[in-house]
Length: 156
Image (cartoon, rainbow, N blue to C red):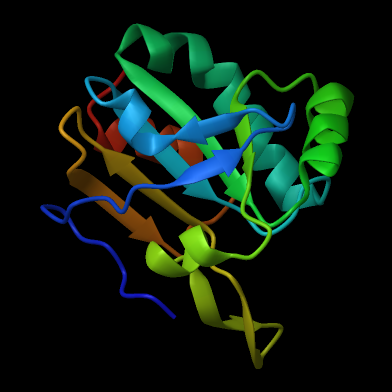
């Protein structure tokens, strides 16, 4: 597992395909604040709730200067189905080899139903306009996370 990121760290750059197959590069978003959230799998209950919450908040987050990127190990084709099925408006990225998740501390050992397993650690990292981590949360709950994130960022 990669080291967990903390405020003040430089966010590791990445280039990942979105659900249309187009590449998105973190450094290409310099000058904007970026919310990067990692989730285990598209079209599962918790991940759907979280993606819908981010989509419902996207307009106000964008107005506050934030771009939202959701990253999972799902292939772009599955992400496209997820977007269509749930009418998602956020950018969904595919990290099929989990290299970005590992570099960001969002893949590794976690507890699942009392067992220790290797997997995606539901996490959210906020990157400032210069590419520096301003906030990092690991092992977040899917339900209510966006509301908590907004409170922690001082957003209405």
